[in-house]
Image (tube, rainbow, N blue to C red; front, side):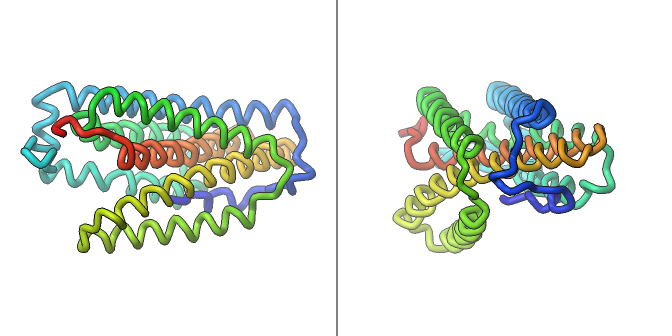
Length: 252
């Protein structure tokens, strides 16, 4: 899901104008720090709900075909979308503290939802795909941060690709086509790798704009939180898609 709309009111400098100032670097460091914090929160909640039978039963029941969501489980599975939508439209209204709390709550709920992956796939698959996602994400983030090429038009194509993936996934809910399932997964991996580079470059430009314009500390923190949310979504989607393609299920 693309959630860059909240940045539209802030200066985004051209790639050739991006300075490597202290404020810009501090902003990027803050974005990655909050992304890692959110990932840590999700990991803790995913493990808690996968390891505790009582917590498990509140969200899903285990069957021969895998986890089956309860009513609360279905609500939790859609809750992350609500959080992202709320944070995006409330960017100008909410304080930095409120957005930070919402990011933490989003990460916790996302962890609950991801707990189904912990019991569906083997530990080796989870660790292997997480490590692969981390390396791939890191390489593309570095590319986006260091490249002099303007990725703006590339980002527009990736957004179109993301919309196509969502539509194809919805269609395949009815078709149950294994071929389409894998096509969507492979294309999705490519799209989110590209979005990682694009989003990092855009965040770098936002950091340069903060330094150039002298944005307030409160607004800087809000941009930091939303930037962390953007990169979190890129990483998590990449991780899930890698699992869909290369993960080995526990009951196989």
